[in-house]
Image (cartoon, rainbow, N blue to C red; front, side, top):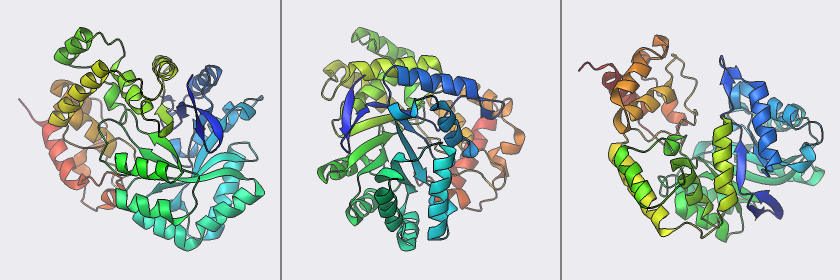
Length: 374
């Protein structure tokens, strides 16, 4: 496993993200999830990332349970303060203390203000959340303070400059160099001494999809044995600014693939043929993608039941990969109560979308495409 420095700590280049744990019948498959976390730790992963809302609030307790028996002392735990769940500074204090309880620990190694966009930042800053971070650092409840981010780069720079942060977490992959903070923001943070955590390196799993035949033939002709997902990870690992790259892994084979890429990749190791392959994949996705959605689920829950991430996943799938498969997934494998046709254009989802997608418009397009007859 490759290791890098983050805030004076030696952290694994690959971090285990707990937003997409294995699920059975709508609930975390506890045995499978804990087995994955334990295997990752055994193979050298020492950065475990979770958050208050993941899996309906059940991710943090699962992580706490998984790290009992002496494992807590061998890893760094990261979690986040949910700005949408606070109205007063007392709420911030209460949530932090409850997170410590959920995680069965007396300290959180890397604590973040979660999913900052302009209004959320203004809200937390106005409540005095930075003072909370200072107190929690002083009394040892947290070891390092940072923020995760989902807005435009100018807002990112404003937040970076507002306080003496230890680190930040941003979305970054070879499709999103100019999305949100992007390359410009990552370099800005690194130049100012902030450690950088990368999330969504596979863009919600999209960049791990099998390649179309012509690109697969190109991969073989270039002598590249890395899978599409491994290539995407190697592209991020290649950047020296990225201390930890988070991957949400819910299958053992995905974990093994990611571990292999992390163990073999250091900054500057991406080869010219690999970059050529990535350029070709990027160009193909740009041609075919119809909705720039990463399935982060910040738009959920929809008050009228629309499963927005699933609708957009299938809409993109219909464009990028297999239209019939996507239509079958919508018409036969999606609850009709979750169809895009139930959208009443209330706009609540658009207020929370980190990608600033015109969700209302795209839902209408998606429903029409996924219900269309030949």
